[in-house]
View (cartoon, rainbow, N blue to C red):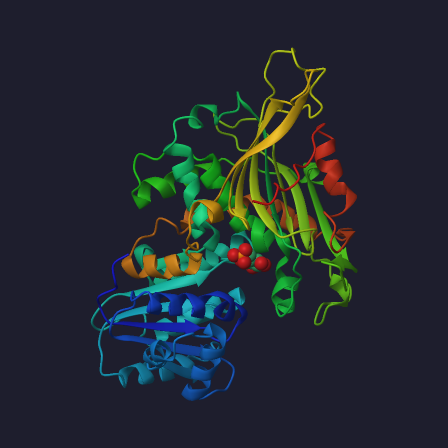
Length: 489
Ligand code: BG6
């Protein structure tokens, strides 16, 4: 990575929010430590919280917890803060005045990390305050998923965005695409000659995606109650990971080729018919249970949650991609909060070999499984059948695995570091394209409509379990079972 050359001002809207604390500020500090930020760099934070520049500096200090004070002092010099509501145009006028007081002229990056319901006003106010165009340099905007809350609002957001910015100025973030392990999918599939010809309905029985967390919704209650699992992770992270897993080989590594192939998968997702949803989609909501040995309360007992909320905190579904390569290969997805463990992985279950030679000796009775472990304990595991040593012929399933931690004596680059860097450098490869986002909304829209029905109620599951029994039934009805997360690496 080459250092960014030109002067840059980054306007961080939602600068004291959950995402800024968890990811963005740390990523910016990493870029600073790595010497990648330009010599002239300003970070202007904004949120509703009233703070001075100095208090913001202390806040950022507490978030990034710098080890080296002299490094920190250099970074701290670039920090500014302006409190204000994004609902008020005046906030953006003040941001402009503050910016005009800087003796620098360069590029502008807006990073919008507020509640998604505030995006449209934010964009309109950026334009109204004449901040949509930097006087000497480019202006870009980064926004966090979810982009809208359904097909119609996603469309509206896109219209608002594209009325102010050109497509190549807009960077829609789905940080899963920038995870090392998701980036590795492309290399793993296309740089090795041994998998690609098997990556086909003729050889693959089913695909399973687990994106589970044992965490709850601490500090994000209002957002989560408005959002639910389908909108929070399935419409975006899960579908984007699927797109990379199932896409055809792109012509090149150029952004337009890679994004086009990802888009084709999303455009080929088979739409749900309303009358199939009962069978193919299950919604859960956690009740009190035990997580890591601690008793935790149920969703309805969490602070700020509507007492009769019907928000799903987990979901499981079966879907298909109607392309030549994947037609009729079931894809099972389960995701959500307060599930048994925090793990994201994609398992490809191959068909059993056609010979019947070992069928009586095979206790596992399923084809080989290749698991792409996205996080944690990042790596790849293939479950193979081998002869168990002994006088008798017995079959055992054993893992053959590669773990990042054992193999590379270095940490993985945090997705947000890569994304901010790529947005500044103008590389959109790891950002979802708007038509792909639209296809994903079309895919989940029937599920959102289904949730609006008067009789809809998510099924209760105990916090710390793998969801309600219907999650097991969903896959059992096809005479299959969930592949348990792969062994520790
Ligand atoms: C976010 C979701 O986009 O991704 C969260 O809103 C989820 O609910 C998070 O916890 C998971 O991301 P990561 O990188 O922490 O696994």
